[in-house]
Image 1 (cartoon, each protein chain N blue to C red):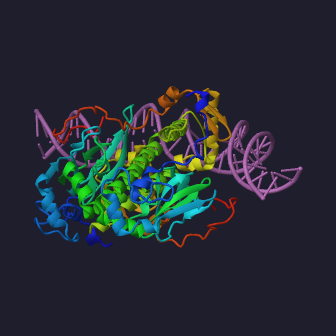
Image 2 (tube, rainbow over the protein chains, first blue to last red; image 1 turned 90 degrees about the vertical axis):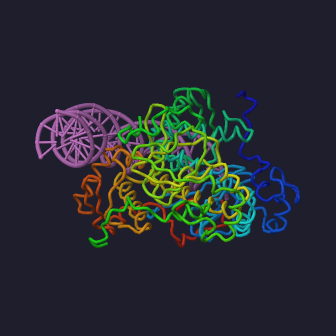
Image 3 (cartoon, rainbow over the protein chains, first blue to last red; image 1 turned 60 degrees about the vertical axis):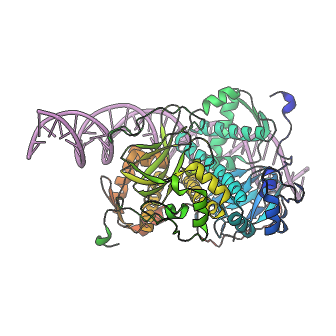
Length: 276
Length: 276
DNA sequence: CGCTTCTTTGACTTTGTTCAATACATGTGG
DNA sequence: CCACATGTATTGAACAAAGTCAAAGAAGCG
């Protein structure tokens, strides 16, 4: 929260727990035969020969990891950098469906289908661990612990997609942008970086595409928040000055917490109000 | 497509392949010890004792299947009827995050977490197969084929959530409603019912909540489409009169098909346009 | 250092929301 | 069986929020 924790977060590499857990033989991750957290995984992995299929991938800014419609050959875990996955409309407009940061999986949503359902593009120079999709499919269908990992990762992406869904349906421009910033902040905090000062890896247009606004509206909202003293904006460098106030603005969306949940009749008459 | 295929779809029960595949011992589904499609599943299922935990659940219209925040005790497969899953904001507004029809899983998105992340409410009288969540978790972590099934089901929900996401971000009111109607039609077709005439199980308000519009706007768009001769609206009974025209309206969203994908430079300079 | 891309800001338009009134349908009780 | 009550749907008019078009300013890149 102080000045000293304002270091640049995005360039740093992560221990990439996902990558290690998935199969355990990432060149820079864990040495072969030594997998943390999933007992019994190593031996079976060795048996199915997944590790042979793995390797490191490097992307420069703007390069594609895969294109929509390509046959699904691999799934990736990000070690360093940022990836956006996006789709296009027939009239050429683009929609960002997710941003992926170190430790996240990319292409996971295409694992069970033959062709990628989106584009994946690097927003900056990025390093990833590659997993051969067919090996992974075989492994997931053979090796239960691996299946659980995939289940978990996929569920995480579903939760996020649902959160975006309700954001887009219910929130105003200001609320959307604040929510987005707080998501980023939380992500950085989770990765051990400053959650109050960071630099955006994506353009205004990409932010707008993700949260359903035009780039102009995103820019205007940044300015308004800065005028209000809630944040500081210098190009892509953002500082969150008043997180409580920001959280108050974003407070509208769903309560994912262990809410007590208003006790409503569970077996009452059909005339019971559906909600409210 | 003719008059004769205008029978009422929603009351009918389905063979519920999901339910059968999941564990194979649904009372009305497949007899124990006889599971189709997943070789080797039966014996192991017998060993883990899942089938004992299963039973049928019946809900009347308006009743809750579970509440947000409740401990996750079960996961469900719909045999007949319709379920909506929804969340609420702090100020009491509701957002439908998904509609579930026969054959769909409900509560799957909460399987890997301790508390339900949404409410689930019956839109009509509904029959479901219940699976004890802990048994399912154990089985998924033991039994690879089951994990694959869950992976598949979860992926389906993620794809749909992503589709809603891009719908909300890019489409106009008319496009959203048309897209929604076509999704419904496709769902009915998939289940062997008429895809050109059906009755909505949800109110204008619930539709609006799902596609990010107010109930008034939904109503107006229904009227406009009817004026244009594209559909017929009689309360909740909808007839799609000109599906090609409707598809043209909805054509904006992403191409999930095996698109040839515009070949863009894959290893070119960083100055390559991120999107065309 | 010049070019390109990204960002900001302004003026105007469009779309969808809000508020409000009316109509319709279904199911209930007299 | 009908009148009534309730939730649900339609429609109109005024309003607000975000989008569009346009132009100028700032950063980053070669």
